[in-house]
Image (tube, rainbow over all chains, first blue to last red; front, side):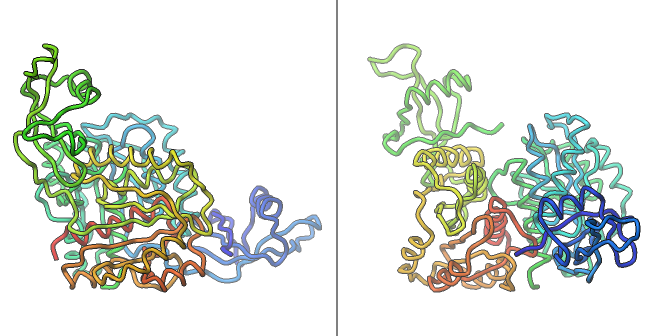
Length: 256
Length: 256
């Protein structure tokens, strides 16, 4: 049986103890019916996790029925990718980005950067960001990740290019996925860049329905993006990110 | 601008003509507002497609406003994979399989074989098959494929294993995706099998929520399946097929 995972804040961790909030204690005791000695996994969403166990609270002020948690050992499950992946995704129409957030979290993404491109139809409401972050939290717990991806507020693709233009770190590789071109396949590019085995960060940009405009492709290349192909078929805006992230994760997780 | 694609039946193709059905004619003329001389792509879903153009119907019985289509030339867009991929997928709960059909069609799958496994929660109604096939048709048109994947009626995983057991073709490679094992990564297995460059057919099996049972894994291995990993994170039953198909398509479409 898999142990329950619980995201906790850094300040809840003190010495060997997890200072559980009343709602968390309620969840563990009343909903999951865990008792003294039962174990669960506490994770801080930043890549750290601990095996913890419930014990009676010995504090003199506590009620007899209360419990707290003690850390047994740190967990180093290798569920995080050895490369930090930022997905730059033009917002698809409707609620399409919900599924992109969920699935890209499952696939190990580190950061999601929704952008508004020339052909983007959607102008998201500010509440969307909260919703997306909630979906990312859930998906990180379910897929047994130690990190929760960070989602930034949507900005224009042009503004993103201006920001990333100044990132001249040679150890950041930027790929722009384009359809209908004769660009090299992403898998080839990834495997070629792996010869430099220390590549720590990849940024991958996916266009909206209808693709990037020619002007956007040109501007992205100027900003250091390399155009790549995801294959011969036309993928929907919600499918393309998963294909790209599947390839990145597989190249890093398979044996070389 | 991309031309509209239309799936037609083999019997609609006669000499240089496409005998359009009234509903198709309505769609081209009234919905898309195509007129005499406008072009579209007729595809038979079996890998053939033709550039066609609308012309006035000269048949004496026809009304003056009616039109038919003439074939201009065959199309050989390389949107089909050089390998035939069969996806054997334990049915996910709810309507999850709808999205698996849509996305796996985009990714080039040749055949979908939904199965009922020990942990499958869903027992689909017979109408589901029609619905899935309709989704596959739409997705094939949208992703500019020439073939429409064939979807078989759901059977038990045990029955599938009995059927495939007798398929002793050494040029059919069968992979069973398992979570939480120490099995080799699918990408490694695919690239190793590509050294035999003529591999014409791959079968890939994906489990339900909660995974395959130990007994199912053992039975699959007996039937010639090789267990493989899709990476360190736990994927949902609707995400795992896309990861597997992304890798298969990329290995065949990238340069070796």
